[in-house]
Length: 138
Image (tube, rainbow, N blue to C red; front, side, top):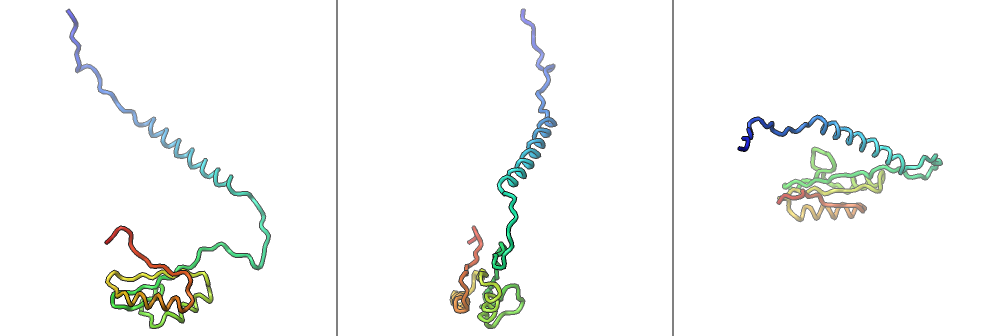
């Protein structure tokens, strides 16, 4: 006669998580160190000469021009509406010619208000103008 197996005495399999955490931390440190090493590999140490006409590698200035639904125009971070932005745009472009202007119009703004701001920017000499929009929302 066959012997009966007692399934209640068999232990349940266990997941030992501590060694897995150790391996994950080791991999994290390994990739962090190797990334730092690769960044240093891609740059050659060179003593650059000084020049008066050298361009500095700075990010271009971004100026936001906001038009609310009442049609008021706000230049950059001003709290008060700006009457004529052409003078301020010319002043900004005289200081930093590569300034980027972003028109932020309210969804309910009249299209003519946005067009007049765009015309004012172009008349003042702005070359880099874009319109801001939220992604994914309708």
